[in-house]
Length: 285
View 1 (spheres, rainbow, N blue to C red):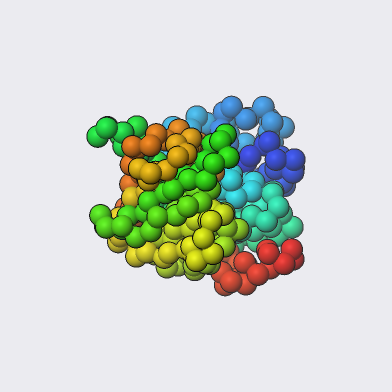
View 2: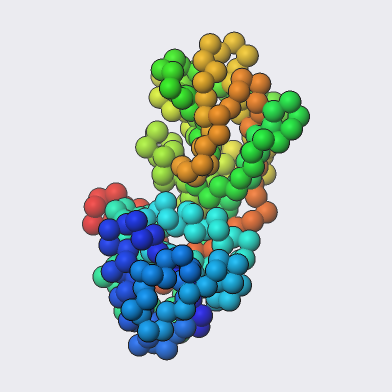
């Protein structure tokens, strides 16, 4: 088996965990490589191969990502076009998406022996248009968030479903999440937990003014549009994609969201149910 190692070396423990992974992979007879720009960190590893990104993903059979959930999201977006499954190994804190913890690396033998399952996760396509022109476009595994910028004013945000008004939220912003993202920021904002084996889109207001403003769960086949209401006094808004890149949004911009044709594939080695993982992580076990 050929394995691409994508560690987030800015994480305190990620380098040491990756070195231990290499030791186990040597024991199990797997080939492995990392990106050339981080090879200096692993030059003492005899069997480590440095490769450019354009070579690494076509070469490998699977990807091992070492980091927290942010690292996994980044790796997932990098690899989705190559259809390479990812095994996430926790070097962060909660890491809901981790397939293994750092003290479970002996289970890598199951990866090499093919004793694992694949979780296919729905993505959403997000497009921002301004005066009929596309100014930003992304795939998101977790969520897209429209929220206020430096001004502290509340914002009126309209939500349309298939071209018809669904809600107008007076809030600090809205989160549009996939089932995978329903246990992230959306959950913290009071949204429902959706099993990631399902396909749906959940819209959750952030700190809404009304006591009756709640999340709405839409079908994955619905097309969702969000935009600043014409009567809103606050137009200082930003749109972030999976908590990383962000763009400034003007009052007349339109944000179009729909189910993506792409899916992200995550390797599951342990026989744990989603809600078992969730409860254990939230309980700090």
